Length: 450
Ligand SMILES: Nc1nc2c(ncn2[C@@H]2O[C@H](COP(=O)(O)OP(=O)(O)OP(=O)(O)O)[C@@H](O)[C@H]2O)c(=O)[nH]1
Ligand SMILES: [Mg+2]
Image (cartoon, rainbow, N blue to C red):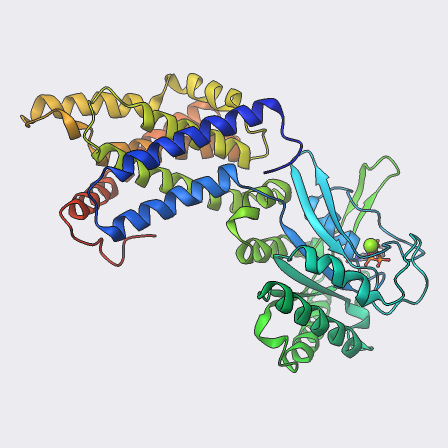
């Protein structure tokens, strides 16, 4: 559980946990094919992980002193959270440290510079730089290991660094039976020749200068990748090798003075891709990359919509829409949270209120009754159409994304709602068919999205 949880957040989490528990209970009563159950459980699991079980993503940053480890942490936050050393070696004894902003924390093992040139400013009793990080690695396993080299130093003595990296991998493997993905980064690419050519403002620079600089960046990347690939113990784990710049300048007060970050968004995308769901929600809040927030919010929406389709198949009176409404409310709260807002009822309730009280449920109710008038069916049970529950939930999710992630107005959100509802109806029918087929003992088609 995230620390520093406010009372409101704790309350909201309790409500969501209760909703999810109730839905799980309901789904149990559905005589579904085991594959369909498995799929629904996976979707409930995603909601649970994103909304209830988030933790700080954990990165081990390995690199010589001055390679730019602390700067990279700041670059991920887009704010000054880590002390950057300009003269002396800054980061002391290797330990896990939570860097945090009001949007969440990233747990970083900011190793003291490997191959020290000078004693770190903070006292480190451990003589061996490697020994100082083995202890912490035993205590907690990183989601991703980031290996940093200055672009200008990539060809000097990198073998010793890679030997250290191998030791680190061996240790993690021994302790955790896990080998984290490895991301190799050449930092300080902005200072490669031609030094004055700004990569972060490339469109304003002469094309040939930019090309020359990019060619140098590629050269460094190629060299770095070749070196790592030559080591059998590291090669299988390498997922990404890129040059970038994390340079940002801050005033004493912490105020941002200059931002020359280049390709950090690509790095963020890579880290997101290779970390478990339990860290993803927190990470997209911190890094504020809209595309990734959207991606996660879309996943949440779809998962909730499929679950609601299942819930609609449970034979309960039409009026008992509680679980569907509650799940839609949780979805809205979750999307608001991904955008960086606190996880509490207020934002979700205000939004739904402004949209026109419980829009999604209203749709389900209205169309459910319409269906009831048309069809003479025995038992009022499954009169809430799964297709309508699906489309209504997709619509709520689309509206929330429009409002919370894209900063749209309530009017925009209403439009997004109507569009998404119309465009999800066909898929809703397919989803409903799938659930019904499952109830008749047939497995879902293999292409059904998981
Ligand atoms: N131009 C440029 N400077 C950078 C970049 N990344 C870091 N720096 C600068 O390099 C110096 C060292 O950066 P740090 O982030 O403190 O390096 P570190 O790896 O944390 O160093 P230690 O904690 O001492 O091991 C600082 O002056 C940073 O401003 C970059 O991509 N480009
Ligand atoms: Mg540092």
